[in-house]
Length: 117
Image 1 (cartoon, rainbow, N blue to C red):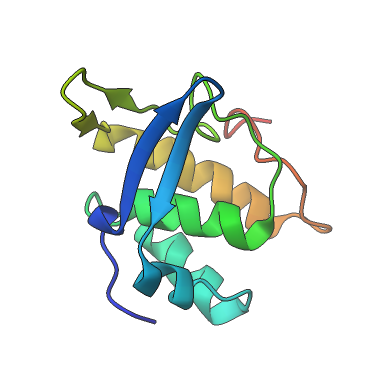
Image 2: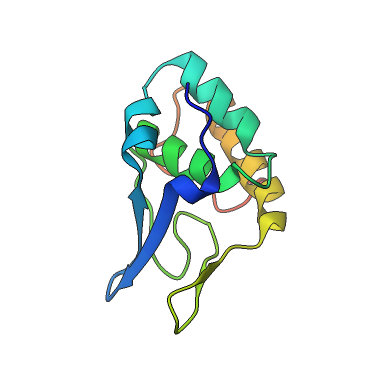
């Protein structure tokens, strides 16, 4: 798998909510296999990779999610000048939610709202 970073995902916002734009190299790296899923799960604890991991896992899993007010639970602040701010502290909660998803059998079609569900 390529060495991807959060910068491999940029964000647009429209009437429906947030829309990730995934780089070509990230799109090519997101494969539905256990090696890729394990790598992305590990990246959820990395502040420089948790966004690309969350988006990749969502894409691979084909989850149903809401794009607003959060994007599948990822809180995004888009400034009027187009800059995007994503608090890296939320990576801990996302990691727990994805670990629960990964451990479930069968795997759910929706990511739980909290790590306690």
